[in-house]
Image 1: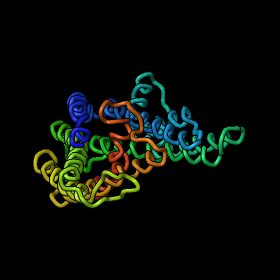
Image 2 (image 1 turned 180 degrees about the vertical axis):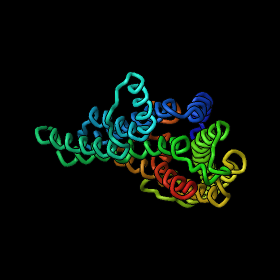
Image 3 (image 1 turned 90 degrees about the horizontal axis):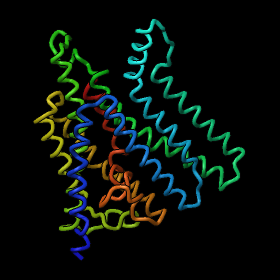
Image 4 (image 1 turned 30 degrees about the vertical axis):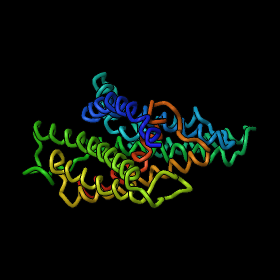
Length: 317
């Protein structure tokens, strides 16, 4: 029994040892590099979600959903893109008229929704109601949620309140570099805290778990494991605040740790509900030892918008 519990652990460790440095590097680089990473994760997670729904007899518009999912992700880096496009054409002596970021986001969602409705009007495959619901929800519940992780990284170079953290509201090159590093450290700290929460919950459940958390959704999870995960999430964020997140106050780090400890685990349960409904163990086998992309980042996709809103509207307000 114990052998089966830990049989995939060596594979998990090897994959993590290879993937973590790459993810940390891209998060610290930010910009289009980090955008590319999130698009890759978001697109695969969305594809896996659509495939789960097909096991229930639903026929989502997979290609269309993934295309507009990419455009939704693009909306969260639109401010950077807009400035680069303006500069490129300005150097050519051409002045452009472009959407604002909010306008672009709304136009993408409106065109996407109307396109799905029109296609299903003429499509003769499965239930139009179910097809539309799954196709649209996939983009809203995965692409938009992952997009807020891009927004979290971008708020530091493009929306950081300099006057709140630096004297005379003036940020020189050194300050700007520090602000950008804080953005990278924030994303890395969030990922590390989620990993710490997941790991603590797993081992806490294995060694001390007695009371089932939500057996009909995820039989292996226990209240004891959830408590371990919660405690280590808070500890992880406090350590991050004391080492690399100097812009954040202690009580704010504790609050984010609480959010990770609660909503990170809720996100895992949400995805487990989808998998149990589809009668599968993993969303795919894309990542050896870890299952699918949605399996690996289910906590992050649910948690990202909550943490983004807290940091943007509370910590940096």
